[in-house]
Every structure is written in structure tokens, then in C-alpha cells.
Amino acid sequence: MIVVVLALLASIGFGASAVFIKLALKSMKSTTGTFLSLVAGSLILITISIIFYSDELVISNKIVFGWLVLSALLNFLGGRYLNYTSVNLLGVARATTIIGTAPLFATILAITIGSEIITWPMLLGTLMIIFGLLLVISKK
Image (cartoon, rainbow, N blue to C red; front, side, top):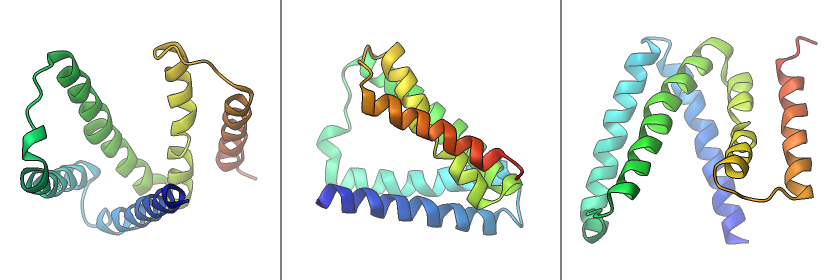
């Protein structure tokens, strides 16, 4: 049960963050907002990591490090910029709903790259995501 509560708290944080971004982007470009957000987040994360996890900061496996760098480029740089731009142009409610289709793409990649097996609940959930996306982007 605690993991469900933690996941819901994360969702609240992401939702609130989108509103704060919309407010901040009224006075700056998406690129500036992305840059400032990455710098602030990096400083906080580096400080916490050094204080609590300094033993784990050394990554000797170059393949693991490569995957982490690729994830950082896609998620923190590309994803955040596109997230901020979409929130700025579409509004918080529509943009975050569309961004919420991430499980659809995660499922597709997990099956194609990660060799995971699709189950009926995963297929049904994926179809529901597609249906929800169609509802959000429709004009009616």
C-alpha cells in the first residue's frame, strides 16, 4: 500500500510541477526554463548524492554508464524541453495528459528492445491509453 501512496505523491509532484512551469514560462522561453531547471535540479541532486550516496557514485561498468548517459539525454534534456514547450503551448491539462502516454511507449520498447512478453492486462491498458489520448486531442 505504501508504494501506491508514494506513486500518487509522485504524481501530485509532477502535476504541481507542470503548473509551476506554466507560470514560469510566462516570462521566459522553454529553452531558458529547461536550462535553469536542469541546473537547479542537478545542484540539488549532486549535493544529496554526495552527502548520502558517495560510495555509489563510481560506475566502473562502461556499458551501464552509457545507458545512464543515453537516459539522461533523452529524459532530462530532450524530454524536459519538449515537456516544457508542450505545457507552454497546449496548457497544463492537455499537455500533461498527452505526456502521460509514456507507458504506451515504454510498453512498446519493453517488448521490442527488452524482450518482455505482453499480457492481456498490458494490452488492455495500452489500448485504454490510446483511447484516452484520442479523447484529449479531439476538438469535441
